[in-house]
Amino acid sequence: MPYRWSSDDPDTHSVLTLWPHRSLPRRGFAAMVLMAFTFGTMPLYGLLGTVFLWGILPFVLIMVVGLWWGLERSYRDGDIFEDLSLTDATLSLTHRPPRGPLQTWACNVYWARVQMHVHGGPVPHYITLSGNDRTVEIGSFLSEDERKVLFGELSDFLKLHKPG
Image 1 (cartoon, rainbow, N blue to C red):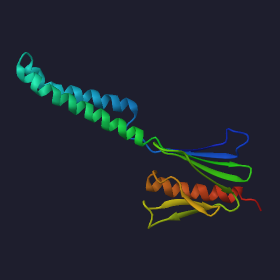
Image 2: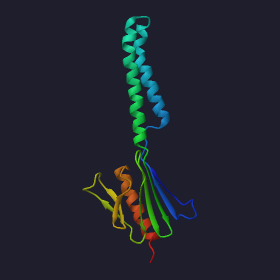
Image 3: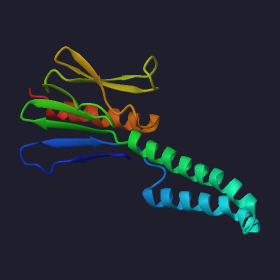
Image 4: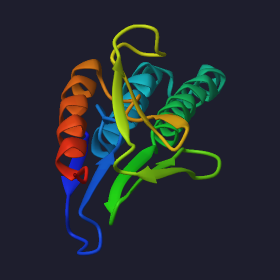
């Protein structure tokens, strides 16, 4: 699962960290670009020593650079992290988007509510946290099955930590 519960910090009772799933690791990224370069230049070996090589080679290089740029852009767009923490009686959510400022939300854990919107959200089984007259999304970049499991874990977490 692309999220982790931890309690390393003594001041923080629990921390939930969420991040998007990476189906292509960095090692696979490098292998993909190398493979594209190798297979892209393979037909050019027969053109070595001819003028045609210099006419086709720039297009192969543009293809490899375009693939590298697209994969790198995908990695940058996936640099999203969400941190949920409970300190004393304050539940805080920090959303770090790939570009732009940090977004934060906090409320008393007693008033915090987690809801799952099966239909009508931007994604199926959309999870929101409500409290302090504000509703925020959490884990929208997770898969549908991961959001279902996360909803159960968040519900249990809030039940466990609500005073009274």
